[in-house]
Image (cartoon, rainbow, N blue to C red):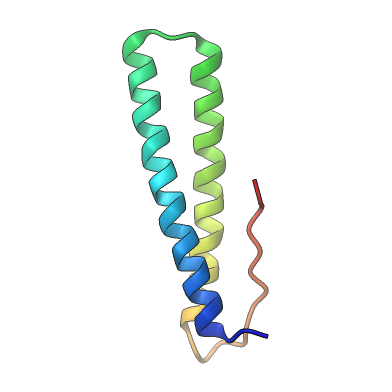
Length: 81
């Protein structure tokens, strides 16, 4: 069984990766909009962006709970892709 610090470090690393993916999706969406690419592709990118932001919010809540040593450990689960 891993300690809170290890779990927190794992969640922080996952949150950093999600932020990078969100930034990439934002750039792709802006590029597609500028190129007038099909609406389906833009909708797909928008959906991916919403999902990644939702996952990031869950992770940030989990990290906040793990960062406070006064709180009892919570079960942190983010939806997997």
